[in-house]
Amino acid sequence: MWLTPARGESYLRQALGVAGLLALFSLTPAAAEQHPATLTGQLLVAADAMPDPRFQKTVIYIVNYDEKGGALGLVVNQPLGDMPLDKLLNGTGADAARKAGQILARYGGPVEPSRAFLLLPPPPGATGNPAPAVVATLDNVISMIGDEDRPEQLIFTLGYAGWSPGQLEAEIATGNWDVIPFDEALVFGGEFEQMWARAVLRRATDL
Image (cartoon, rainbow, N blue to C red; front, top):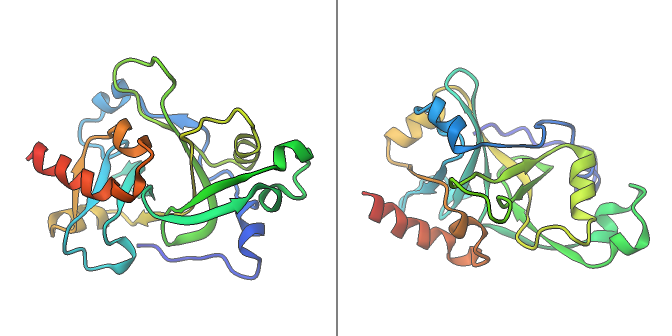
């Protein structure tokens, strides 16, 4: 894994200092079919004997995968705790009403642990097993977490998991990870404490 945590600023200030690492996007099944070998949009399920303690019993959504450029993913089942919106949105221009309440933050991975991402469920009524959307630009992150009408199932993560070219393939080949299709009910079902166990059962079923 790439380990390049940002330094010199507070945890929350860095969370709001996220640059546009990714644009707002979603992967559709049609796009995945054009690249059948891609891992983009799939889920990684940590093996029972995962040797890296940072990833034991984790489920990771692969945001982007490229054989030459490596891979980026978000752990979706490890809570960090509730964060007050007033601290996250302080200094962003958000009005007081939008700063009320809290949002659950999850550990997205060990790389840049202050970088914020949002994972949004597919729109209601969408057909064809659509993939979630990922938000990583500062303006969109602020807008979404401060929106009283934000999706109830929105996933807010800090940090991400990254692999250099060939690294993830090697880890999969050695049995550290299993790959299963994205499952909206699994990821956004609200029972993240049981997500890894459910993913293991899904993995066994797929086998």
